[in-house]
View 1 (cartoon, one colour):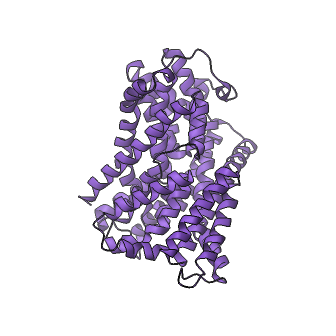
View 2 (spheres, helix red, strand yellow):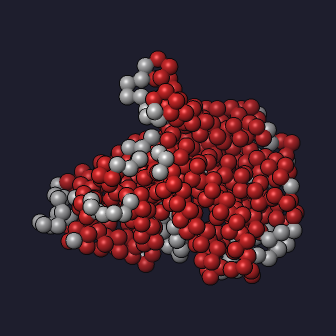
Length: 458
């Protein structure tokens, strides 16, 4: 219990540093890691030693960022290339045109889902907001009527689908195949997006009717966005192919493994097996996808290298802090593992009747409520529940998704996404809690239910 008290104090300290004193999240995580490590050095509390605290921090950061640096860096550039070339605009416009006003929510949700696979949540939100504004004004409907399904689609891709930060990082920690996580993640994400999007919109209109008003003017967030002429943007097919290229490569490998190797990666692949294994590796798939994006969204559109490299530099800058935060979260996780806390938690629940998937979800929800950041909560939870996979005989991919679902629950005032949603849609705090917080929690609960159903068949 003493080690768990140290963990509780550490989480409380992290919360105070971030919320009360507004200390940068990266710095807060490193400070907390050191203090928790010191607490676990006390005899009878943990198995950490003073000399191993910096070693664990270095190990945690290095192990997490080795693969993620390329995946996130190239992923951010790919997404920005699609957006700056007008591909995101083309995808949204085409889907809206095909679906018509009657099914406009489905069009927005589908567009957000496709674009969200290639873009980080915050980037996707910023890029889609002006499009949603314009469509809402033209159709004469409330902005939130389209905003809720948009946010739901972006959230599920962020929580469940590689190459997004949390699922990719957790897959690495838990030893899950990213392609398998992607395949199962899509099965989980679709019902979550539908229930938390178009279906929840009907309930939200009753809960907060004042928020669903038709607005005749755009706020400042939509005024500085790049405008496109449809005829000057890439084709719909090319835009979708570019956005989904890494997903297609990882999907090919996953399906190949399912058909020929019972869904498991080949241990020592040769010949064609080796080629398929290579293209499905997240690092290689992002490298190939970026090269394709440079052609499809760049050279093919008549853009010069100077313009493309400016886009790349801007994209890298936008995720620099995110990478550091992920590394620091992994350092905190490593301290918990090396200090013995993860093992102790595993022993505590060794004879518990609670499903390891539910337990992982509950732990992540508690961390999400306390810390705000879904990525930090997910990485911290991954370190705590890692021993449960072997003890409970759980599919690692489903454990990744259970943690991903828990990391989306109960977003509130300590989460940046909460304030982004509030400001973009011109809501007050009460309305944001009624809509955004409930929306995120619905995704978390529905996600867990779907995961438990999948667990019966996998």
